[in-house]
Amino acid sequence: MVIRGKITRPLPAPLPMIVRKSWLKILGVTFQENPSMWDMHLDELMSKACSRMYIIRICKYYGFSRKELDLLFHSLILSIIVFGIEVWGCASYSKYLSQIDKLLKRAYKYGYLMYQVSIVDILNNKDRDLWEKITTDPNHALQVLLPPSRQLELRNRGHEYELPRVRTE
Image 1 (cartoon, rainbow, N blue to C red):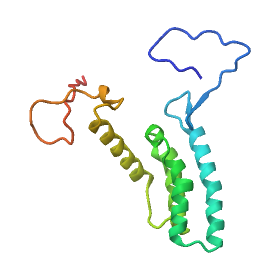
Image 2: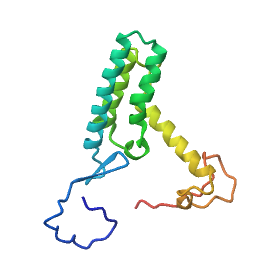
Image 3: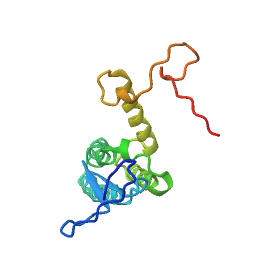
């Protein structure tokens, strides 16, 4: 996999002793050549989650309470689902995120969760938390990417930033 910006130069010839891969794993998130494809990452994530569901099923068999099962589910399964969701959460709902929703509904049905959760709600909460961190911390690394603050007090937009004018002609 070759990562490059807007450079249009042709790629160099591959070296015979180095095999080019079609994917790259960084901090547990698997990136593929097509940025909108998350097949490898979601397959690995679902495989881990399903194998850990077995652990919770055994714990339920041994008489763990629903509260303890909920704590186990949050620490064993939901933690791997939520990790890096800001990066891969933009994936297509019908193709990728619906699989996670089915897993969460199954966990609630089996009594592993005390309340039903949705991947869309989790994603919205994480996005909101990230936005709050970026906008409230002046030393945040992404702060420099924000547009300048607006000077006029107009209607409330939920943020204080001046949006750029975009023409779609």
